[in-house]
Amino acid sequence: MFHALADPSRRVMIERLTGGPATVSELARPLAMSMPAVVQHLHVLQASGLVRSEKVGRVRTCHLETKALATAEKWITQRRTSWEQRLDRLGEYLAENPEPKPPRSRP
Amino acid sequence: MFHALADPSRRVMIERLTGGPATVSELARPLAMSMPAVVQHLHVLQASGLVRSEKVGRVRTCHLETKALATAEKWITQRRTSWEQRLDRLGEYLAENPEPKPPRSRP
DNA sequence: CGTTTGGTTAACCACTTACTTAACTATTGT
DNA sequence: ACAATAGTTAAGTAAGTGGTTAACCAAACG
Image (cartoon, rainbow over all chains, first blue to last red; front, side, top):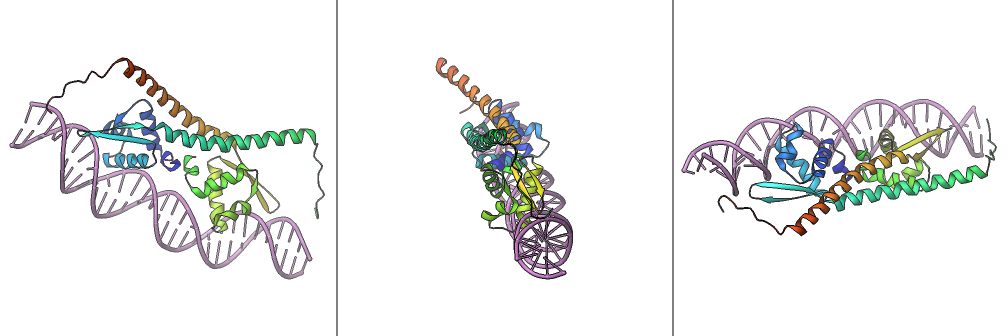
């Protein structure tokens, strides 16, 4: 899933879908690459669960899947906040204890 | 940066760093791969800005850079929430208008 | 009917990625 | 001084990624 977000073209597609559903050719338009390439990117996005699509007639319409995005977000938040809390505790500790400086074996 | 998060081994390293700073060999221990491989992953993590490290004597100590994580998180949140708002508005609209069903040219 | 139009599949290619081993450097413990 | 430790560099490789073109299929249009 992070792999899906790792490619610039795919992020452009995601940003496009942020503004509402889009067909495959609409996703392709701003992308300076052939249609098959876009379809491959779309496969990656779908495999990651970030995007879903339904085909009606001959046009496939794609839309974002917010749940998946929320999952990625959650993972990041957890790591970030738990580390920030550690930093805070360290800050408090250093504010109280002014550097004991342990001796070195051979300078 | 999403590319840095896209690899499982690198995510393990990040999770390890969540629990506080670590040396290169500490990061390597749970990883079933050679040291050079770990160093390469570390390079990627540093290039992405997610991790920083200082070498004192012969041991390099690595720690998380929360700012970078916050950036990724922000990107995701923006996309997710703006799409969720769209969904909400669509929900309201559909609740008021009970499906007009436009005619098809030839069924 | 035949022809666009929108999308899909397949086969291929250049480049990158994620490893490996081997050789090396610099610090630290005895 | 010597050996062990911690990490680094270099070079090679197998597999994966991102793109191409060409051929193809089915729905919509005239």
